[in-house]
Each structure stands twice: as C-alpha cells, then as structure tokens.
Image 1 (cartoon, one colour):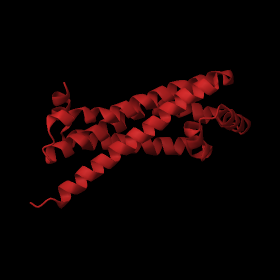
Image 2: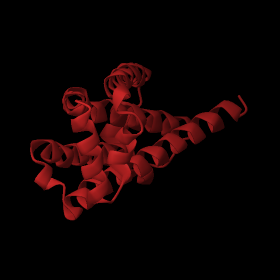
Image 3: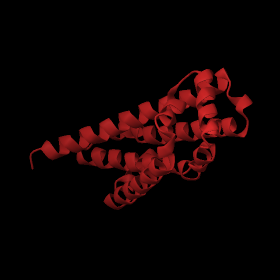
Length: 172
C-alpha cells in the first residue's frame, strides 16, 4: 500500500497541481480571516478555554463570528491540498535520493497533520454552535490537534526542504 502511494505521489504533475490548489486555498483563507487578526492563530493554539471564550466574545461583539464560520467552507478541504502537496514533495525527495521503502511510512505524516486539522475544525465548529461547548477538555482536544497539526506540517516542510536542497547540491 505505501509503495503504491509513493509511486503515485512521485509525480511533478501531482506536486504542481496540489501546490497550486494549496496556494489558492491558503490565499483565500488569508483574505477571509484577515479581519480576525492574530486572534485567529491564538484561538487555534491556546490551551485555555477562558482565552478561547474571550476571543469568541470579541469576535461576537465586533460582528466577526460569521466571517470565522465562513472560513470553514474552505478550511474543511484545505488539509487535503497541503497534505497531498507535502506527501508528493516527500515522494519526489525519496525518489531523488533512493530512500529505502522502509521509510515510506513517513509519507503518512502530512496526512496525519491534515487529519489533525479536520479534528480541530470539527471541535471548533462545536464552539460556533454553542459557546457552552468551549470547555477545558474540548479546547485541549481541538487545540491539541491543532498544535499536532502545526508540528507535523512543520516537520514535513523541513523534510521536503532538506531533500530538495540536498538534491540540488548533489553532484550531477
């Protein structure tokens, strides 16, 4: 299964397509959430239910909650774009360096990041549905998933960059 995934993702066409989809999606999200400011990142990364409640209260008072809710129209599919882009980058890097098949499991890391993103989104949607859902346990689950998403995505980006730089510096 992983060998087949690696073979399918080792494609410049797949990498280009999902990079383009990611860039358009990321730019769209940036435009949508821009009025939410730094609180957009804080609402994903704090482990304090009190902080999340305060952020939602500020957004509600400013009339920004509909904008926050609207961003999920893009953000629920966005993880597919970046997960596939990063996994394709890894597959290209693995092929360039003849990385042994035993490391193919690492192709799943970007998809685990994407799954964490979806989990975060689902928890945060419950916050939108009812502020009473903003509990310490729910914030820990949702934002724990968000922090894991950020960490796994960062590791994937670093790995892709390392493999790309190493390939560029390799003698012909």
